[in-house]
Length: 300
Ligand SMILES: Nc1ncnc2c1ncn2[C@@H]1O[C@H](COP(=O)(O)OP(=O)(O)O)[C@@H](O)[C@H]1O
Ligand SMILES: CC(=O)N[C@@H](CCC(=O)OP(=O)(O)O)C(=O)O
Image 1 (cartoon, rainbow, N blue to C red):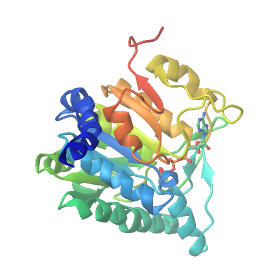
Image 2 (tube, rainbow, N blue to C red):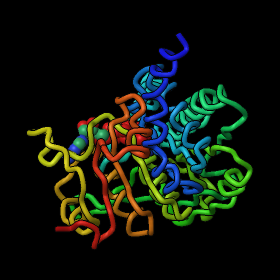
Image 3 (cartoon, rainbow, N blue to C red):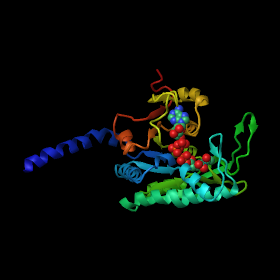
C-alpha cells in the first residue's frame, strides 16, 4: 500500500525538479503581467490567473499585474447610454466616458483581481497610475491621415515613478495597476491603453519579462488569413512588421518593442484563454506564444 503511494507521487516530484532551472534563473526577477479584458472570459480562467501569479510570487519572482478591461468598459458605457468608438486603436474618451472608464477599471476590474489574489493571503494591493505619480501623461493626439485628431481624455505617458510599486514589492506584495494616469499640466485624469501602460512600467522597473495575456495564441503572421503564430522575433524584425499590424495588436506589439528596447529581456504575447499559460511560459521550454527579444539574439 505505502509502496503504491510512493510510486504515484513520483511524477509530481519529477515536475517540481524539472522546474528547478527556471526557478533558479528567475529568482528575484520582476515580471510585469498584463491581463487583457478579452482574456478575462470566465471565472475559472480568472481564478487560474490568480493562482499562477501567486505561484510566481511564492516561487521568489516579483510579479506586477497591469490589467485591461476594454470589453467591460464598453458594456458599462452602453449601460450609461454613452456611445463609444475607437480611433487609431484607442477609445475616444469624453469627460463623461472618463468617469465610467475610471469606475470600471479601478472600482470593478482591479477590485475583482485584488480579491481573487487575496484569497491566497494578504498579498495584492491595487493602485492606479494616479497613485503616488506612478503614471503621468499628457493629452494624446494621434495623427490620422496626416492630421492630429482630438480623441478626448486619452493619455500619452510622459513619466513613470516606480517608487510606490517598488515599495510594495519590497514589502512582499503584488501590485495590481489600473491604466489611468494624471496629467501635471491640467491635473485631469487620462485613459491610457493598458498594453502601453504595462510596457512603460516594465521598462521603468527594469523588469526581466513583460507578459501580455490576450485572446489569441500570439502574433499571427498573416492575420486573419492564417493561424500561423510567429514564435520568436527580434526588436528590429518587429519594428519592420509594425506598419502592417491592425487593431488591438498595435499597442501590444508597440509595447513589446518599447519594453525590449528599454532593457526588458523578453516581451511575450501569450494566450490568456489557456489555463495556467503563465506557468507554462515561465517554467517550461515550451514557450506557447510570441516572444520578442533584443537584437542580436537569434535573428538568423
Ligand atoms: N497579427 C495579429 N495577430 C493576432 N491578433 C491580431 C493581429 N492583428 C490584429 N489582431 C487582433 O488583436 C486582438 C487582441 O487585441 P485586443 O482585442 O485589444 O485584446 P486585449 O483585450 O487582450 O488587449 C485579437 O483578438 C485579434 O482580433
Ligand atoms: C485609451 C484606451 O483605449 N484605453 C483602454 C483601457 C483599457 C484597456 O486597454 O483594456 P484592454 O487591455 O482589455 O484592451 C479602453 O478604454 O478600452
